[in-house]
Image (cartoon, rainbow, N blue to C red):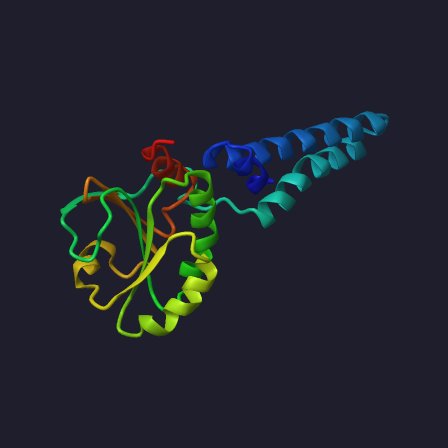
Length: 199
């Protein structure tokens, strides 16, 4: 449902919230119907009502978990001028490692962002001397939607990113202005990056 709402043009935040609201309302409706059906026996009515109130939410939450960084903009504000490895003036720089499962998983979300905001420049940089082997896998997953390149030297970024990958860095006027770790790059951060780009 989240993807449908994103395709419909809603923000990442609203596309995450609306399904939960609908599931809660559906559970409430079920609870009311069950309570009315069994109201002659209050104990059964309350027990079944609570069961049908909670179960849809738990089921949806199990499949579509809310992560800590989803509803906060916990990224770190930085100001690094003239990153030597970065060629974008404005956009999103993604730092990845070879064979990183989370890095590979992030690509689908990035492709959705690029589809929603075609002017958004995204550069997917794979770090390390072994990156050449991994580039092909990343290029196949990215399917030409945005640029992929190899960085042989990650010293410039290590002080900023630590050991968290993928790392998402917002570039504004040639400067790195904010970065998010994978756990921090939730719906609020995605909305912020998309809102940065004019249509």
